[in-house]
Image (cartoon, rainbow, N blue to C red; front, side):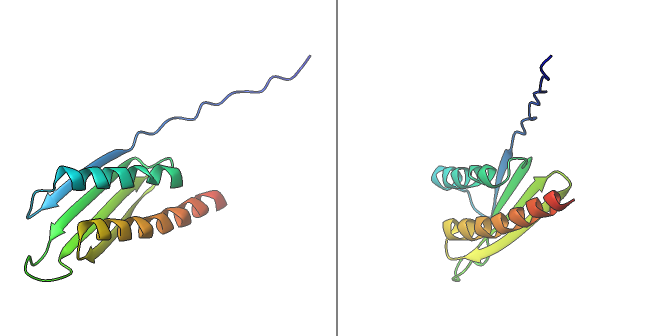
Length: 113
């Protein structure tokens, strides 16, 4: 009698993305840019539950006044990154680069347990 394998269907986690802008109104183009970039994080780690992106204009007249902070909720912890730059696109890219490193470390830590 052949041994039958068991099929495990992996529970699909739906990632929620929240974008909040402080002291200004984010354009649709900027929101679409952020959504597109954040959705790519699922390639790095597929169990992301929630991503909160906060955009803030510090001192409007100065350079390096666009701050982006990202909170990422994964099972068991929350990852946080904050970067400041001349443009929101640049600070979002810097945040996502940093968070990919954090996700890789978190994933490696989970595997070693």
